[in-house]
Image (cartoon, rainbow, N blue to C red; front, side, top):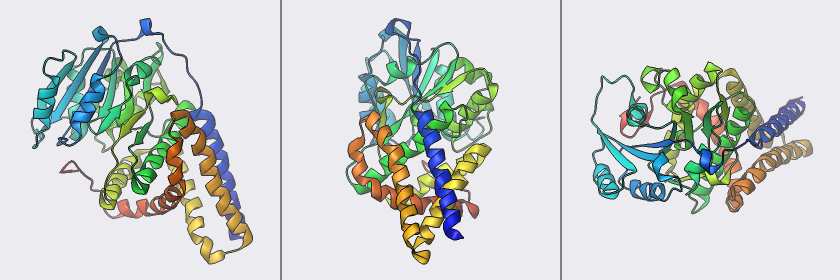
Length: 364
């Protein structure tokens, strides 16, 4: 009986994966260089003295018409040398601006949303792009993202990987791509369930129509809150192109404790995921739970189903990695599989008893 249940779960997992692949591989029309809209890039930075310089250097190398781009760095009340590093780097560079935020417990927006909101309020251009201070962007990143903004498009998201220097960072990089593959597949099929703010963009008009971060309910995953709010307008298309030139690379966390904290933050933010997203999470949870039970009910069919499930994940991830030029990271695929099975089962336990999230020395 248990084997039949597992067969049903894995078969459903396969069907879901095929649907997500179809969604993720959708293509979209693009504007030519002469049609590119004006863009404002907003980067919120809090205590990022170790990361911010490489981010700034990559932003400075962006290929975009000089009269159509501005880059706004928001120092979110840093207590280290972040502001000094930013100020020194942008000196004499006209397309850069910096904001120095002070702590303000009475502000309408909280946390990172307050910093991003401050940058958007200062921005002058039509399309807003966001990334993080620990990220390095492709020189064609802004141009590629902006090229998808036909008149009816309200949000364009891009893929993010991570810098890989071993198995621990390798499994994180694959995990990022897997989660964004799910986000891309669902968004492109018209049902947004997640996104990531370190490679996100939106039309300023759409942002203003939902009231901006200052008027949206607080969330530790403010990026998804905004995405979901724009989707509810039912006025704009939300798209997630699988485009190598829109790739952003972030830095992985260095310890297991940091990794668990990151996953907990995402899980707490994911509580507000629409029913489709919760259904996908629940189906994945059950599938991986039965995999953990495999040793206790060992038989030939159990082993075949386990291999089938792992093959499904590789079937989904291989073309995505190839399209993004990241196939070398798949040498850590089996490490990712073990890690993914474990954390999918642990995450619900992490948030059942304690939903507090610590982020950048702040607790929410």
